[in-house]
Image (cartoon, rainbow, N blue to C red; front, side):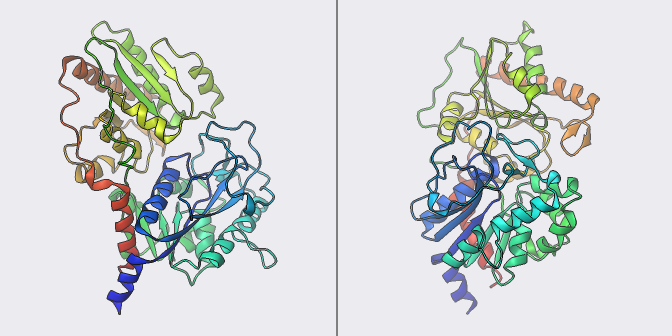
Length: 441
């Protein structure tokens, strides 16, 4: 009987994926979208619940139902905006911007810690519904009759899904930012914790995160498993890569939110120091990502001549950019498991990254011949904010690693042998997730 159930799970599931935020604009959104595409290739029937703006696009495979919850209109449309394909499901927007799992999102957003009781009730009504009117999740459950519900982020919406659908099989995936919200949001912690503790399984991106999940939510250790991450090998690869010509500037790239917790200011300071160092070969910097920080926007508008800011770009454009990049920089102070490091390696770039907790061991265990160069984590005063002394020390440490990398490309020592990322494609992650879902039937 157990073998029959497991076989059925592998061959013909109905899968509902749920996120409270935009599905294509952040790392966790990419994770959800790529899993949906992988499940589609496996032949599963699917639907997605997500939080978007009325002028956003949803880009899922044909046949995947989309049940959006609309939030208040943005002040400015971002570069990815397009008419929503799911207009038939439209209803009045919630009277506040999309709630962001990070306090600084690449688009206009509401902080979870700013949710008043009335806003929480409105959020629950829109996603779950009332006795009189079904919300997006309940409509999706009624239509799809899912065998498996996958919730992204171990936070408010996942807790509400577990609360209202106790008979369904619900798995939650942590992306790291949700754990930070559990620490920071006094207004939601006790509402979230008891329901997350009742999930059928919780999935972590790496081992250190798995330990945090057990401690924060009181989940039984047997219910928390490392799933890891993946990348789109159809998109991020070296096909058509443009190699740097001898004598040309070394090409450096940053892609991600333009925000302080991402270490953007320290990266710019480090590169400014190197630009003034006569022993450092010429380089150029290309930056891609949305910015909601007005002070940082002013900085981005006054970049030096060697730097260019593209704004937010879609994944295909990022793939092209990485194929024209020598050094990819991730100077962040807090991440779950950054997909972009994998994408950069697969595209032929050499990543330079903060030595983020849990990231190096996972990469070393899952990537053959990894070539990431690390700058030490600074002294921190909060989960994503260094001390003043820590910032200064990190700027110096990052500049030293970048200097060695730039020289390495100039001398021909880098990039070296291409890392082997074949074990961490999205198809592999999807297969592991389905196996985990069926493992205790």
